[in-house]
Amino acid sequence: MLNSKIGQMFVAVIALIVVVAIVMLLAKLADRTPERVRRWLAPLIFAGPALAMLGVGLIYPAIRTTIMSFYDRRSEEFVGLQNYEWVFTNSDSLQSFVNTFWWVLLVPTVSTGIGLLYAILIDKSRFEKVAKTFLFMPMAISFVGAGIIWKFVYDYRGAAQEQIGLANAVITGLGGEPVRFLQDSPWNTFFLIVVMIWIQAGFAMVLLSAAIKAVPDDIVEAARIDGVNSWQMFKNITVPSIRPTLVVVLTTITIATLKIFDIPRTMTGAKYGTQVLANQMFDQSFTFGNNGTGSALSVIIFLLVIPIVVYNVRQMLMNKEVRGS
Image (tube, rainbow, N blue to C red):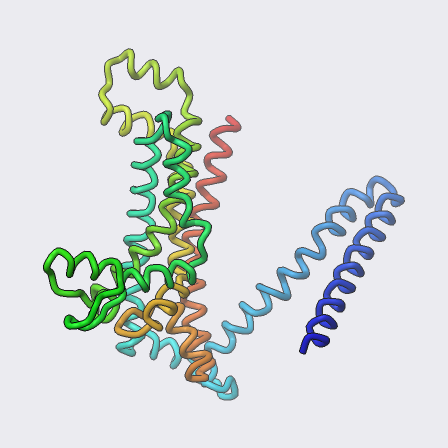
């Protein structure tokens, strides 16, 4: 086993060295070509490997997955739109759509709201760096790690047993009955959403805090001279000034939320009515061996992400044009 792993690592290192050597050789050859040829050859040499990897690792799988979504579970017989019909009619699949909707609605808005409020409250305060560190720390934890941590927080034992979960320990300590945080639907989905918000709020805070600090001081001073209050300052000065960053934060968190898989899988095994689209896709493809339905779900997730990415790119181009003018 050890020798096999060493051999694989050796092959990977050799392959990397070969790729680097080829790129360096091509770059050297391009440097000796005429100026007119070099203008289009040099970008092709440096972008070529990345484009090739993009094609092999993303474009080809996307095309193949789309084709497979129109075939049966073994990708042998063409079944048309039957897989998509199942996705939009099956009760379990529809439940995953509803759960995903709540994830996408709550995680970006609440995470961004908390991050924005936190950034404003601690801006230029005495303990700003320490306060930012506490909120940003969850970003250093993987989704799986965060799921395991919060699974212990939400842990439930019978009423007659000692509660080892932090939340139920507090509840029973105050005289209440233990709560089945992860077992009772539909509230268990919202308790899972809390974990994602806990992780993403720090990301939102860091970007928004930087954007707030970039607001020109002369605009702020002019507003204060005009006698605006704190709410007017926030509404009419801060938010319009940081709008591009707000859009980036919201869309980035939304895309990450649409693809959420780890937290439900780690905390509930995607059971008890907590499945989202990514969990449903995984189960159909790898648990039940239904390649057609799993591929259809993959295509749907991809289609849901595209408008958000397009909107984000358009906003970035608009902001670039405004700054350029």
